[in-house]
Image (cartoon, rainbow over all chains, first blue to last red; front, side):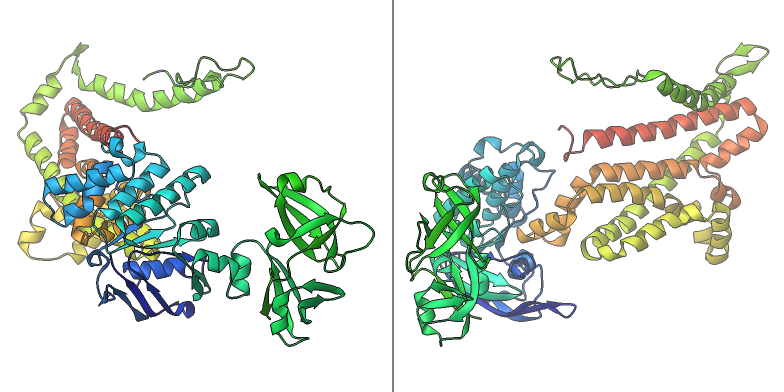
Length: 351
Length: 277
């Protein structure tokens, strides 16, 4: 258990920059998600922390100690992999015991610790089973117990849930969070699943093209994205390119209310991001009420409690609106509606 | 030979009647199987029959008794077995580490490995002998000892051993298993001893038994280099005593067959990834 300090870590492969002088500090006991599209460098960063990849420059400090020169086996970091990585020739118990065993821990202590951890991940009754006798979710639980058995200073999780089906994934996600809180181990989780990142993390580090774009709490990332990439990558948003015009932006003939646009010079090119849950709809009578925009419902997507309506604006622009499903059912596909939103809701960013 | 298993007995009895039955073995199946069976079995049956022939319509074990009475039988068989073990050891200590490290650190070298492993198939044994005797001139203790044969046998067995090991290595996610073990604090020695080797057991036994079969059956090298191995002994006997040679062929067939059966049983019994345990 320790603080982790990533300092100016740089890595390129064959002239292509994978990580660009990256800095990231993690607090003791914190769970930080590295989130980004595939190829953004998140896995490379995790493997650099683990010691499997050597950075071109930069340092990894754990609890103030520079571990950059240490081999993976000397770093005391537990790791759970995306692929099933249990040793096929060993039972669940022997897998969990492996770390203490190679460290020369007395046998009784190995067994005690392994049994305790298997119990913690809910697999005490499966101790004598071989990996091929366990389901994917159970195998990843054993892998988690195995990683914790070395009493790691840092726990590294490399997309541990991505091979599992949806229901098991959510279950195990919550369990990882519980175990992480109980053990208090500093944890780095790599994922490309934003829902996973938002639901499990203390802080989310959004990455793209080898850069850290924003490191903040899930709520901040969602409500106050730092730039256009974060805004469109996290959650859903309708995007409009226009020009600032007072407390609105002008997109062709349309005026879209956005108080944040007032901070820009009138006429400056900006992007407007509006979350679907901020859009409200009313049946369109004769006149468009002031501050609202006329739209036609193109199609609907049912999500259970919510329904997303895909709207087309008079100039051809697209707008999403998420409504409670009962409310959404009052609107028919093809009908004309007035769309509006609170002017404080949209994010406006310079182009 | 057991009846062909075309209707799996695990099929539940409550299959919907509309569903067509899997096609039976049928006439076409037998039309292929029977000639194949005759092609493989007939020479064996004839050899066994001939090995039991004592002349004048009499049959018995005279040839086998005469064979067992020859002092060269145990010595030549022992020499061949020793050579097989030595060759297998050479493969284990040279080929296996090379393959593990190629898979882990230099997967781009795979085509080169494949090429080298196929070469012995391409070069005829007699060309290898000629090349070997021209190249490996050396002190008497080396070229005068039958263990000199381990060098060519290594290359003869290489394609078989390589294939068997490659199948075993490909079935493992070696990179992930190694990284998992390393992150848990294991050094490379521990990784190989505790993780890689136990999971390669079936492949290892397979490659060793194939090596055994290759070395015991090898004739050209031993004969040209004048060492009296088992295959050379078979040939010698055959030039004088026809029925005894047939008996010897049967014996060597049984040894090879036993080795193959060993491969199959071990492969089936210890595949923890797929099989029951």
